[in-house]
Image (tube, rainbow, N blue to C red; front, side):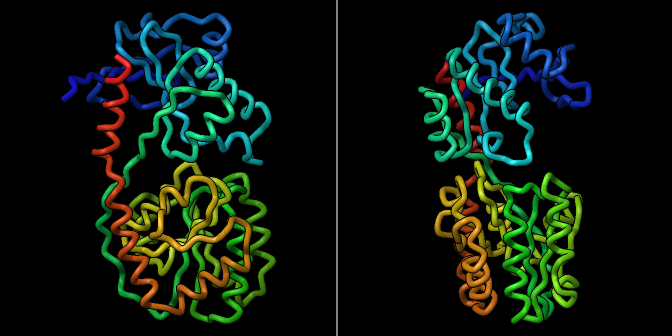
Length: 324
């Protein structure tokens, strides 16, 4: 066992510190502190929070310290996401490079991203600790004759939602019972998505439901009640919606983008990102085959059980211990 005390710090007045850990607010905005710490190499974090054994920057900002340091890099989407500005891309890129060049250990959440980090930054110490998925107990609503596809998450361009709408049009012309729900807050691809839906024939457009942000309980219910969760992303560092759906017994159709094959294993049906015809064919195959849907339900439940927050906590604890 490890005697672990967490000292939490934040650079934002809007952040909420947990009540069960020692917390500090550092009176510097994140952008200013990053500049000062990068340019001058100080002040060290110990000046604000006292003595510590390991410093862990969980969101790109890694303060100087006399102790071992860890930076979490969940993915490198900032390098290839068309929705990001050049300024923010450069800022994230510099933060990771500065941390690596100064000898920090990099924590990430998949082997795929770990290799990306090694390739781009020549990082020598990269550790993978998978996140977990919370076991979900959601009562499925009585099945209707409708078949529902659901996609969840912010409407970012890299999520492939335009491809999903195009694939849905192909399916819906032949299947009058299928509907599509797109659930999540607006992102950089919201306008294009709205135009794509608007361009559908009326008898298909009426079966596409753009549901915005909903609370977690309603989101989970929508996933649980769906016939299939579709996650058509071009790039993921992990792919939480895939595992969340699996944990609820909802079959998954996704892509080979980024780390998704590593996380989904053989428990999801996968197509290449951007292959609209293959997506439509795969969805049609699933919708027409109850036995296949059942097989992916069982495989998904087994797969989701392999990712627990207990294992995540142990992995992070082991990482810290190895640096002392």
